[in-house]
Image (cartoon, one colour):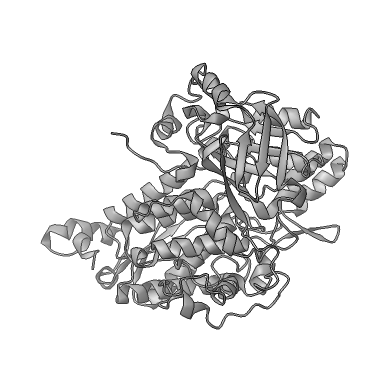
Length: 555
């Protein structure tokens, strides 16, 4: 066992004395030591129940013959961090989570791990750590929130953000806003639509690192506790069989995840996190992979914000495995990829049933014949940009209009809510990329303001920052290269015409190459917004959005 390095032999007698200080018996010390990485805290609604999940996992591990040992991982609530300096500290935690978990797991020589994440950066951060540490590992998330109900309709957090724009436009009252505040988030759990947290928890199943139901069983269901106990059993079985994360997270498994991403209509943030996970196994993931996969993958789900269904509906319809089974039936999934169930993904989904053909459309009746995400390139984004195509209204799939240029999210929001943005405009928000932010803030506030003001079918938004999974509309993010490193988005001027053609994967500035070259020659880099602390170190090491904003040490 790996833990023998820490606990066996005369030399490790001091370590055993410290384990004694923790209350472990000699019998417990002899068993495999299983780290339970619990992301519980009291500020993230998706994490407030994780102490219960951890206790259930510990029972499962102990029943199966292991010694469970819990230690923490951090998590940020993007909804709470949104709209102020706090959002600069969201994406950066992904790498902090991966680094700190790697440190804890290797320093204490755990034989196996059970990861308990839930919200946005917590899931990919722990997947990155799992690939690095490479001991038998199982994921069990905290589960999604139930949808709220307002005036007989299901609602979620994205409705709350859009209500702010609706109030500004005079479409609803102060009393309506308070009702939204009180009802859109009725339970613990990750926000109830196909936002980033739920996207990544669903894709964890597809990658093979989570048991069936990991992404969809609601947080408040007792079934979630049963799943947690099964995760404890599963990790001990993996330990016996020596099945490790790098046996599961392979190039084919990542491409499977990208395929299911298209069918589910996941958050654009998956195009940051899948490359980062791929990087940990030495797979150079190019975001352009998305387009050929999208061309052949039907979009089967329209979960909020793209449509009126929610995670609880997907769960009742058969969950992620039912979606995977639909795609297996038309040959789009590599069925030989291993999973934590001990079966291949093909074997694991074989008996899955689609119980609701409106929530999960059959492959012969999809919402669209192409997938939920698209990567756009052109002279405005030579290295690519990302849009959630499934959440764009048909009339905005092709659009051209004048650029309205802002060098920060705050300036853009002020203009939108101040009525300065009109039909046809293309809002450009720059210097919000991984380096320029630093931290690549989510632009949920401006996209929600656009939707709430009634401009969602006539105004596009382009940024070198990123979007929440709750964003909808013609919201094009991850523009690479970013403005801070002299990408073309830095040279856009007020009134320039921008051409967007999502179906043909293009985004262009109607400016000649000669004019762009002249503007570049006259461009001066902006002074860094942050010069001290973690963000300053992050800005020096982070790569561009098209590479997943991974950290690299430059020679």
